[in-house]
Image 1 (cartoon, rainbow, N blue to C red):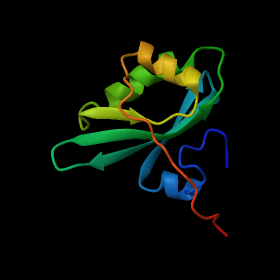
Image 2 (spheres, one colour):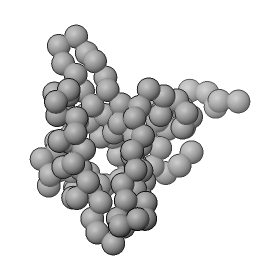
Image 3 (cartoon, helix red, strand yellow):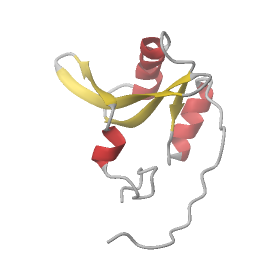
Length: 113
């Protein structure tokens, strides 16, 4: 399990990415980030969810790319949700207007084979 895996090792990468749109961000002609966004339709709203993201660039990817993602999904989604295990990412997201809606508590009951 990756230290950034928000499923606690319960989901494979294929399961996380299933049904999502994979996007690449380039700086010049060099790819610097990849992210996947999934649409979740609920009874009273539509939610976009960043299900995976990774990258490195000579600039702040969160501050520069997140507004673009928000704009891209705003026509179809009422909210954008991001799960993170990183305290620093939480602070960066809060500075961009995100709020903490819940804590996720998980206890392993059996070890998967």
